[in-house]
Amino acid sequence: MKRIPVAAVVGPTASGKTALAVELALRLNGEVISADSMQIYRQMDIATAKPDADEMRGVRHHLIDCLDPGEVFSVARFVASARPLIEDITARGKLPIVAGGTGLYIDALFGNMQFEDEETDPALREELKGFYETEGFDRLLNRLRALDPEAAERLSPGRNPRRVIRALEICLSSGMTQTQLNQSRLAQPSPYHTVKLGLRCSDRAYLYERIDRRVDQMLARGLEEEARRFYQQNAGATAAAAIGYKELYPYLCGESDLDTCVENLKRATRRYAKRQLTWFGRDPGIRWFEIDTTPFNVIADEGERIIKDSFYEYWKR
Image (tube, rainbow, N blue to C red; front, top):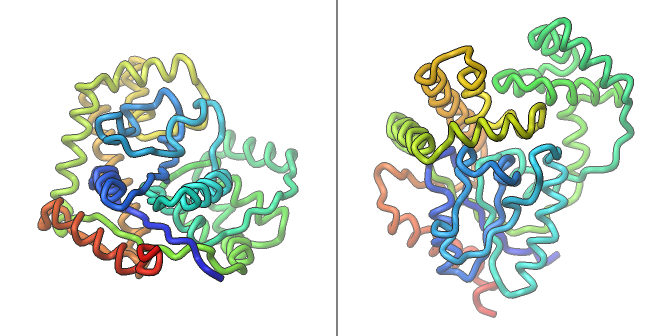
């Protein structure tokens, strides 16, 4: 099977993924497919660090500003959306460049994970939601830990009850753990020949300083107003879990002062970056660059060379 060449730029938040993806797209006649679980939503511009027209530099971007905040976007929906985009970009003689920090999306796409239509049990889901509402997150997680300790360990840091409920629903309805189900979906070989470039820092403090500065810049650009408007229009939406909104919510409700909420936002973003680094660090196929010790133009030059060498047959056409 002749595999489709696809490049990827991955790494933690605030590492410069968009800038590198755009630069490579300009050099290699590419288009960017966003692998960000929140930039898919409209109205959420500042909190998600969504690139504006100046940052895109004329490069076409996909899977940005596609959904209203009230809609649910999942890994299955991402893969179903990205696959035809890759085919279309390739058919037009361009290079697909997947860029983003949502590791699950990237692994599912490049790993050719299959998502079959599954029977769901609304009564079971409602029972699990009720259990969470009355007993709390920790007891919900303990139920999952008894059935699927691997999934519980993976989901514990994020403290996302919706994902824990989904993992429990899989266990109770299918008799399989989420890991077993995912493995059963990886039977087909990937149709993609991938090159993955990663951005990180040799000194973690450098990344954390970049994160803190970006939060300050977001506030200067109007993050508080954006968050207030979001909650007025989209209370209860899945997208409300976005970092940048939920940390400011106590201030918007008058329950906390702004400085405390901003510090919590910086802390939450740093923790998210750490989780991203852990996730991507498990992938031996990523070619890493340290942004604190390597100039941007050197990273772009080397990234271009790696992609061209890897896709030699493609570039000969």
